Image 1 (cartoon, each protein chain N blue to C red):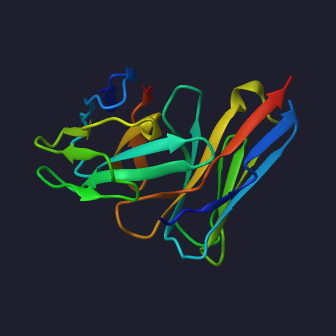
Image 2: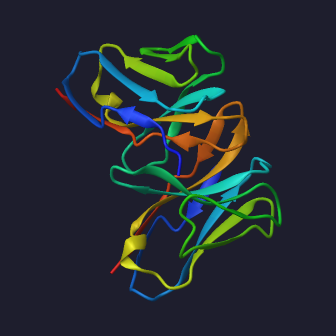
Length: 110
Length: 111
């Protein structure tokens, strides 16, 4: 089945560092979404992107919808312990169904 | 307003046993989905429904059945559980522009 290529698969950083992760696809998407999953919980939406080239922020998080519509990235600035979790990218091609990346597991050393 | 509620949260089955996972949403959403999450595999779609009385296969449907008799409920059944079905199962409903609202998951272990 179709999946997005998300990288890196895992990150180990120090508190206060910036984080960057991205998703790529061979297909075009109309919408890109970024979710975060806390341990023992379901994914929760962080940022939604609807237009090629769009740059959107949510607090310390910034995400961009690639110009080619085949990629997206998520940056987290000045990481804090509560940023720990798994981050998923997801794309929609217009139908009411999402395709997900494999996830990026973020671990923060205090 | 509870959103998407999944029951049970944890379950241990013996190989060959059957069980049903329940998903309930109170947002009047038409589209509902069942995913499984395995380490390094992300979220893979098992089955989905576009409305009451409808179901469709996703990416990994084998070994599972679903039913959507009422709009608010989407049931996932395992007729004869296998160790390969050990996973975390998530239900979701479509919110529109904001993608999915997920339940908190069911952790299933098949021994």
